[in-house]
Length: 255
Length: 92
Image 1 (cartoon, rainbow over the protein chains, first blue to last red):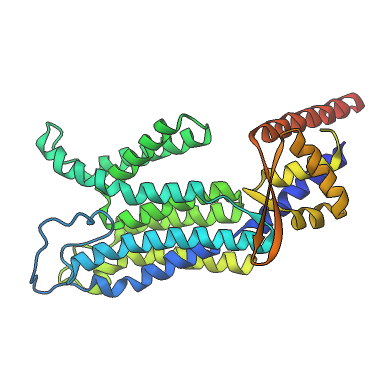
Image 2 (image 1 turned 120 degrees about the horizontal axis):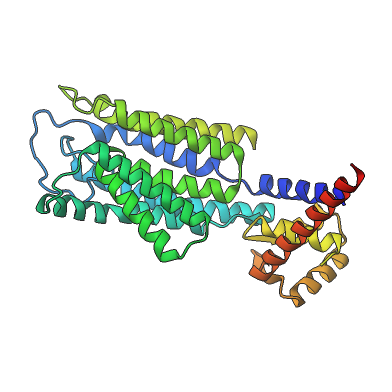
């Protein structure tokens, strides 16, 4: 009987190892982060100020030379990255013979891409209410707690409407508070779901390291440095981008 | 569902969205005929779903676990662990 349980555990371990395909999204989003750096070139002096950029909570800045281009870059990267990852998992599944579901991952990235609309609603609505503007600190805390609650609801298989509402609201509040890394919050959400589906300790560790890098990047990037340079504005993407690329390479090396 | 290989099929299938026939055959070290028979029994019991298709010109058969299959596997694993625990306790 113990032998049987041991054999089944070995089968499970082997199946999990064979279906891992996580280096691709890590490398894709990591490389895309570094490719974005030229788009963070500042506009000195400010020639054209964009009054309202609907994509500004996905990592855009108004002080860069081409704010709309940068605002469009990240949604396109997120969309292409999500579809390419789903394709990659499907192809790998066909090649190896065991396929991981990417439905949850695509759903998480869709939440990350759709939440900015809610964020923009909050930016418009909150000053018109008694609450006023939320401070960055409290809003970040509230957003993180609501996302954590959504993750617990998802693991408990709670009603989908409840989980979805919590995930969208949490992400929206977090992107509202941390708009400079809004795109990385969406990527992080997708990676957390993918790590849970892959059931890989290594991938979970890489995702945790990425989230730590994201927090450090949000806390310590010199966004207000004057005069602004492509490096001071773009440095917000370097640490998460570095964590993604290193995580992808570690995943490739370990197979 | 006590059969060792059927338990193996469900264990592997429960780990993924779907598993290919060839992968199951090599992982479980079964002949094609044996594996087919086990899958047919599981399919008849509603524990797995079988999907036939092509990858290019190559015919492929994919097996995925159903919700009743997942539940049956959980029950079986729980029963097995309880048996082992009882056996260990009786020896101590």
